[in-house]
Amino acid sequence: GEDVEQSLFLSVREGDSSVINCTYTDSSSTYLYWYKQEPGAGLQLLTYIFSNMDMKQDQRLTVLLNKKDKHLSLRIADTQTGDSAIYFCAESPASKIIFGKGTRLHILP
Amino acid sequence: DGGITQSPKYLFRKEGQNVTLSCEQNLNHDAMYWYRQDPGQGLRLIYYSQIVNDFQKGDIAEGYSVSREKKESFPLTVTSAQKNPTAFYLCASSISGVHEAFFGQGTRLTVV
Image 1 (tube, rainbow over the protein chains, first blue to last red):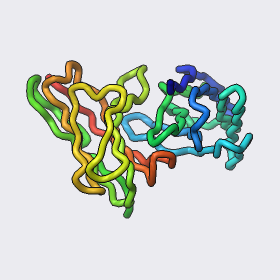
Image 2 (image 1 turned 120 degrees about the horizontal axis):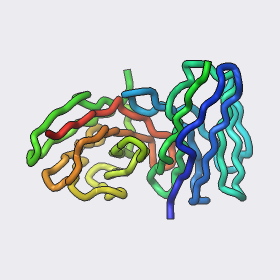
Image 3 (image 1 turned 120 degrees about the vertical axis):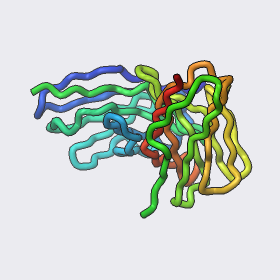
Image 4 (image 1 turned 90 degrees about the vertical axis):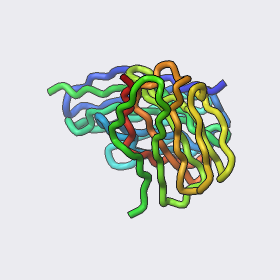
């Protein structure tokens, strides 16, 4: 079946790195995604990784993909107060997009 | 400006009434989706459509209906059969089912 799991909460001090982890079940997904949701708004695509890649870096964001373990992570370097949001991992098997429950990132001063 | 628009942002209805949520996109995307978001539940797929005049049920389709008569539009009707309709509803579109999805700003439906 299709399922995406991620922890619900993460607290990080401002300036530290945040690492949000995700596991997925469907190995046929061509792309895996990270989305960000701010309060009362829709989801915004942060980054994505093609399934034949191990790593992708985009400014402060680093995505790591372990296909063998079906594990995806998002690292945010130098976490800022503006990074406070809910982060969703998503997989895209067979014509639909399946989301995890989201990880709420809380920034400590 | 290209994008995906949901309207209205807030909607109130009395229990027992059907209500239709609008979703329009001018991105020329083939695929469109409806999700429901409840606190602590993440996004759950209600219906999706890969092409005009065709749509499939998602994980929680009961009590909902959709139509896809035009490529640009994918309205969602919340019927009186939906037992717990109060939620935040998100519409999305993508070039195809395996590409990134673009989201609208959501409609918060409250049924009293």
